[in-house]
Image (cartoon, rainbow, N blue to C red; front, side):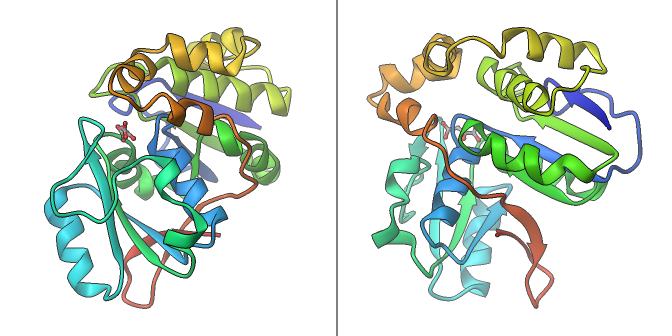
Length: 230
Ligand code: MLT
């Protein structure tokens, strides 16, 4: 099994296609997507921009609009991007449309490279299990505005260590070397974790370490629109 890790989405990709592309956004898009699906959402449609999300809402009636900019709920949207908002009562049976600053953009950028799944710390075990039969895997850390996000690299390291793989590129080696640290310690230490805590969203860090046994797969709906489902 070959695993190539990108520490940020603008790094060079070695191949044109992979058996599996894993996009990581631990704080918080990946955690939120896993949470929504494990709480019974029918679908999570990733949108790159606010405009794209609003247009999707017109095509997908009865859907809920969710997303953030600078981690705060977008004006006029039903929900922000806190996994805590995506509880069963709110999302069960619903189609969600989600736009975030980095995570959903990375999904849109890398979906052309192969079948894609979303990963965060909460579902790293499930995704690792799911990917075992794949030969070539691309792991993309969404990062934060073209900078490395510690929590994403750490999640990539957890993934590599669950599979007990020799890390193949230097990003993978760095990721694996920090993977034995305590989850909450890394989240609290990370730049985005500190930002969320400073803005009253510290509980999201604790939510990010609760296991959710789902593998959000990017699929196409009958109109050819991409969505995450399980
Ligand atoms: C992102 O995509 O950058 C995030 O999920 C940011 C956040 O919600 O805090």
